[in-house]
Length: 415
Length: 169
Image (tube, rainbow over all chains, first blue to last red; front, side, top):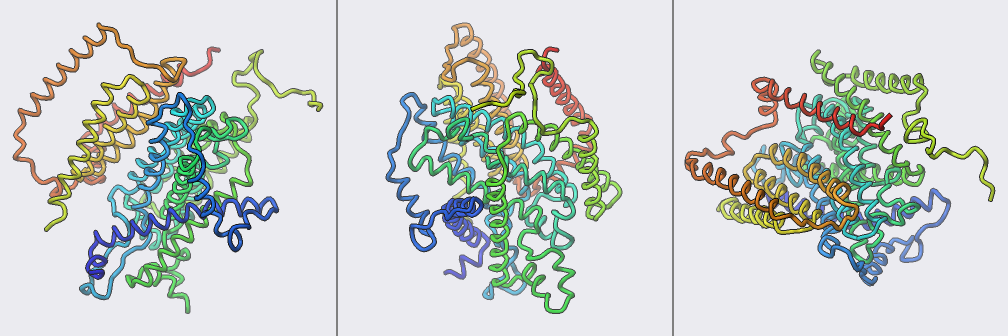
């Protein structure tokens, strides 16, 4: 029976989806623990250390606390939308991960010789577009929650989130377009095997990788892009009025979204489940042939190792996101908009044009693209330096020569 | 027995139900944000039907274009129509009459088209999967002119919006 289920593509996919759900929901809880530990480590504190050894049972305690808290609904809130919004956020965040290529191809010993199954939730021929479509829906939880609360701060958070999402989808699309141009397909597992055959896209397209990393931070509403919640200005932004498990659901959605975005970055730019870059070349070196074996073998053990490698890379990206959150200060809203429209979009367009030209001359996958992208970055930096106007610098006033404009005061403030 | 034979009707009626329920909701609700959300339900349900018909590209495009579009609709609906986000529709009699007339004409046209088509000849869609590559080739070869005209139109709209959004001086 078990052999029959695991031996069919549908059965294996459903098993992997169930396993993935369990892992992601547990990982969400531990991400919060990890976030608190990382922030404590960066600020020279201990962090949670009371519940269980090293505070490892803290997520459990938090969960129980969330359930026991009072569930408060503002008097004039739109009750239905107030209930739906957090659930919508979690659901949309969860549907993204099914197409992540976590395991590659596998062959069970009881299957006929030569047949293999794809060890992932679903293989979609439009993989990248699917993720874009799901990604454009993720903002609805925040927008509807903020609107339904009938609270000015929550409403501002929702509107900020909507504007931010619309602005950062453009550079995200441009960065993805460079990849689609060079890989010639939208299927995520095809993009991963393509990288195993040549080189990781992070090396071939460093600028696209950078843009994608920035937009991933922006789309997950993580600092320095967390303007939708901005405690110092908006109390808690869109979740100001939320309490109890509904508040926890927003957390769940945020961390699930982080995991999915990290998985997408891993699959598209860091070679998916490949352990080290260039393992095909390294396989020739004595004692390193196992690197290539993990990436390509159909044995179940290799599949388990591949999944472990994929999860490891996701953890790395999540750590990077936390590291950035506790290192950088939040953008101001005008800086946020300028970063997207005046820096990321033009650079993104330039790299799409360059990749198109390289494609025309028949060199889609080559080190020329790395050089060209770094060249574009240098030219952009030169333009910004020569024009004397910083791309994301301090804005003196929204309208130049406006006598009512707010300017930084010259005299120091005395307390 | 093939799973699809019993699963497909269930999924179809699920998505069709979502589409119908949301469509009725758009008409009946008086709250502008709820109307926009119902619109999202309708468009999403149609995308689900496309997925069911194996038209993956069309479904993804439907979601990408309309999900973002509905978001803009919510933002505009909330920010531009009224000072209060709790605005409710109160259409006048003449507006209701005009809307009913347009709706009836559209319904008659659609009904005529639906009843006029011979539905039996349709081949199984899985025989010829419309891949992204084929669609791309068609857009950039056979239909290049309409494609470019559409993009020029969008450019005009973009320039116009940027001009309107500029400060006065």
